[in-house]
Length: 124
View 1 (cartoon, rainbow, N blue to C red):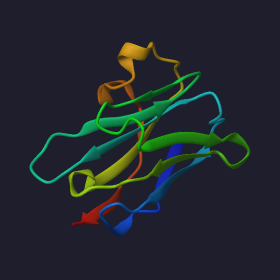
View 2 (cartoon, rainbow, N blue to C red):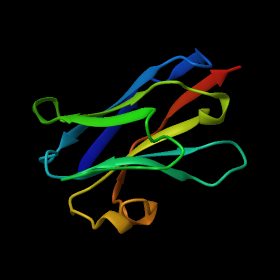
View 3 (spheres, rainbow, N blue to C red):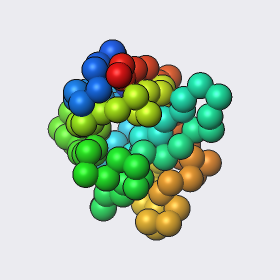
């Protein structure tokens, strides 16, 4: 079993930055595929970024967001720059012990473990 805890959300002005953290406890986390997803009110949950032996980004965040991991701390980060109001959502961390093919990474049904989410609000 893996427990995931997100942190780092908050309120920021448009153009600002935030760094989200996803801390894992439990089993070895370093080989897991870890993804970030987000869900805005009234919208479906959508893929943001993921990291395994490669990194994958949604088109909407490419060039602005960076996903990274610190295996010694069992933590995955999402650095978010140039934020805009459309980035406002609850951000969720998800993990799975498998290494997915790139095309499978964006599908939330593939991930076994989820955090509770952290709110990101970007004001205009």
